[in-house]
Every structure is written in structure tokens, then in C-alpha cells.
Amino acid sequence: MYPIHDLELEVLIYIFQLVVHTPTSLEGADHSIKPGIASHCSSSFTPLTLSHVCKAWRSLSFSLHELWSTIYVTNGVHGHIPLFQLWLQNSGNHPLKLVFRDTVGISSKNGPAILKMVKISTKFSTRWKVFKIRISRGRSTGVRLDATAMATFFRGLPTPQLQSLAFSFQSFGSDFNEAWKGLAQSSPALKEMQVWATWACFRPIISAFPLHRLTTLSLFCIMVAKDEVLLHLSKCTSLEHLSISFSDSWVGVPQLKMVTLQRLASLTLVGHLSTIPVMENLRLPSLSNLSLHINAPIGDYQEEVQLIRISVEKMLTRSSARLKAFTLIEAKAQFEFIWLSLLIHPALQSVEELELTGVGDNVFLDALTVPDLEDPSAQSLGDTTLGDAQCPLPQLRRIHLVAYEFGRTQNSLSKMVLSRIKEPSAVARIRSVSANFANPEELRSEGEFWDGMPELELVEHRFRRLRASPLPEPVVDDFSMLEDWS
Picture 1: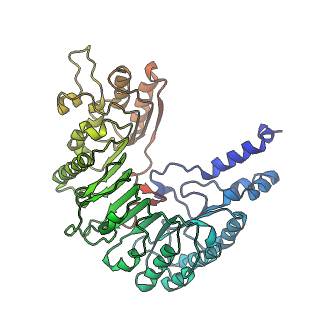
Picture 2: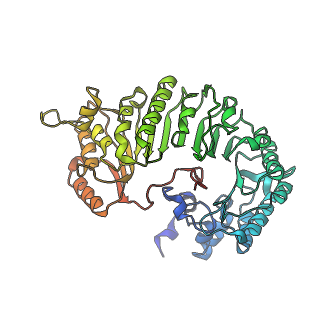
Picture 3: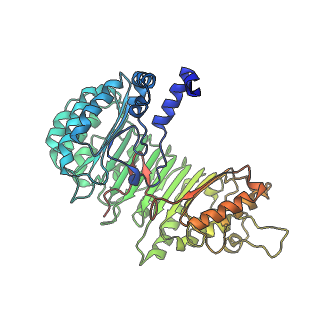
């Protein structure tokens, strides 16, 4: 007998739940999404996998309705329909999370099967807790779903438990609008929405959004001047999480006005100059998590990033914010020195979690390094650049570098952590470090240096090769915020 057969039933059930619902890393998630039906967009483990191990596991997995209640359909084909029906059957009466999405390789042949599975799912609409459709990968290769049929499916559909809604595919006009409106209006519990390109032509849809109830709003590939949702942010009085990525094909003249979102705790912005009018018109007194993904054109990059950084500082000052987490993914890392003044902004002195690009000269790591006061010749770049300010981010406890390369100094990540451990009276002790290395030799060197320092033994660390190239895409609630950018 194998030891696993001696496990208590409750322990085995807990293991099953972890296996099925624990995602793999979302960094570069679009590269790991596989066609088929799964329990998570970035994990291949499903309750069906568990059921193939032995008769006892099959019986147990089929009896656990919760394992089957989260269903991701990627690049749906007709062969998936019986499997989709099996998942719905095995989910019992448990609330459903349904996600229909695409990935590389989708074609017009997938359309009828996806439409069929959406229709089948409407028979279970009273159990929908999450319902998302995102089928539109590029204008030339995307799948066009029948909006007239879709609107018919959703007309008068009862969705009393629906809390999260995402809806986008390649079809526009009155039928598309009616499909959106029907779902939004018939969902009294709706509080989370993901919206793509909400321009003026979608005004009839937006009028149906329960903006006053939303706690989470994600706006993907929008245009500042034309976007309708941005013009109504003042109505989002319950909003706690806001994520926006900008389509920079047309910026236009901003029409925004100052908006105070009292409850907003998390803000994610993706783009470049289009982020400025949003930050210039937001006051966020409860902001604790700020994430910026900046990729300006090469020609005017330095000037544009200066303007963006100034807007960030003004927003933080205006909001009297006290951040707990800060992310800065900056595509042109050679200009990261432009952002250095942010490290001593009052809003960041409470930051405990930091996520950075980690390539270029790594001036951030140098600035975060506490100089050795006993060595008069030792002086960190942070001291020379930031003046006489105290070591920035004194509460920092966790740091993640999404794409780490050595700058002018080898092993600067380990040396930074080590310097902060040696000065417990000045800064908090870093507890967790992770980094994705672009160069395998640098990965080996950093690992050897870390292992050779006894002071670092109690610090959790995870070093690995960078898989996504050039940088992982920002992912919010199952979807890349850069999808359909060309």
C-alpha cells in the first residue's frame, strides 16, 4: 500500500482542491494557455486528470461538485462539447465560474462550437457567479460570433448570482449592445466588470452598467477622449480596484474632470502618455497598491517618462496616499533613473512589496542598498542620486524582479538584501526575494553568492530563468491587458 492511501478523506479532498485551483505563474500567461477545457487558464490539472488515477479517485473527484464549478474553455471546438456538458453535470448545484477565451491558433472554425457551448451554459444561468467571453484575437484572424444569436440567448436570462462579467468579441451594432445590456441589467449581484474599448458608439451599453455597485472595474484598450466609462468614474462610489490599459492609436483631447474615489485601494495603469490625463484627474485617499506598466515610443521616451513620473507624484501627493505595494514595469530600463525620485516620495515610505523590471543599470537596487557606514569609501548610488535622504522604502519586506540582469555591479540583488539585514535599526528586514534571470550564467552566479552568505539563510528566495520575452504581459482577472494591441 502506498502511504497516500492512508490519508484521511478530508486531507485528500484538500489536496484535490489545491491541485485543481492553484494556478501556475501568470507571468507570460498567454504563452502557457493551451486549447481545451481546464480549471484555470494557466494550469493543466483538472478534476478529470485526477479521475484517471484510480477507481477510488474517480469516484471521489466526481462527487466533489466544487472541483468542476470553474470551467475555462479555450479555442472551443465541437469535440469539447460533451466534455463541457460533463463538467456542468458534475458541478451539481455549486455556483459556476465560466470563461470562454481564445489563444494562438483560433480560427473561424471555432465559432459555431463556442456559440453552442455558450447556449448550453445559459441553461445553468441561475448558478452563474462569473461569466466571461473574450474571443477576439486580432482583426484578421479573430472569430466572429453571431451577435444576433448571442442576444437571443441572453434576452430575459435570469442571473441572480452573477457577480463578475466580462464580455467582448468581434461583432458590433445593436445586437451586440443588447447582449451586453441584457446581462448587466438582469444581474442584481453584479459588482465586477471587465470592459474592452468602451468608446462613444457603446453609449447604450454603458447606460446599463451598475456603476454605483461596482467594486472592480477593468478597462482594456481604451481611448481617453472617446471612452465613455472614464467620463462616468464619479458614479463608481463603491470602486475598490481599477485597472486601465490604453490604446495609443488615438489619444485625443482629454475630457476628464477631477474625481475622488474614496474606496479605491488598487490602481493599475498600462500605456504611456494616455495615463497622464487619468492620473491628473484622480484623487485616491485609500490607495494602497499602485501598478504602472510603461512603454513609450523610443523617440521621445525620456521626455514622456519624465511627464508620466511627474503625474504619478502629483496624484500620490494630492491623494495623501500611503502605499503598501508598488509595481513599476518599465520597458526601456536604461531610463529607470528618471523614476528614482519616486523612491523618496512620502507615499512610498510605507511600501512593503516592490516589483520592478530589474534590467539596465539597476539603479533602483543601488538606491535601495544601505551603505556601510563603517567604510568611508562605500557610498551607494542611492546616496549620490537622492541626496541626504534616508534609505528609501524603509518598510520593504518583499521584492520581485520580473526580468533581472546584472548592471554595473554583479550580484547587486543579493548585496542589497544583505545590506538591509545588517542595518535593522534603519530599515525593515527583507523576508522574500524573487527574480527571473535573462542570463543563465548570472542566475548561477547570483545563486552561488546568495548560498555563500549565512546571513541570507532565513530570507526566502526564488531565482529562475526568464521564460516570457521580452517582458511578461500584465494580467488582470484571467486576461492580458495588452490583448488585441497591434
